[in-house]
Length: 107
Image (cartoon, rainbow, N blue to C red; front, side, top):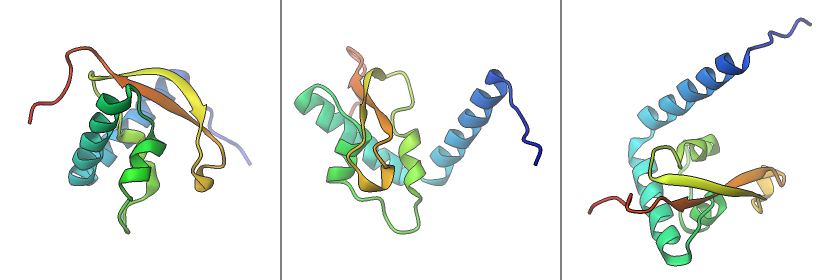
């Protein structure tokens, strides 16, 4: 089998397109999940996708990959990594995020 090897730039562009699609396909869920993430970050200083999932279940019909689009945008800063505690994530690493100074949502 011949595998297609993408350049780094091509791979990053493909990832951004996939995340754009998730943002467009599930805007209501992502808005709610981002509100939860902000609430957690304000409360404890940092937040992970696991933290959000402990408060907000992903509805039936929405694939778990939607969480990949959760921390997009300028208000989030990744400050580290940790292993996921979600069994279905198989201990993959996930980002540890914090809100950038002064960049919280209004409302």
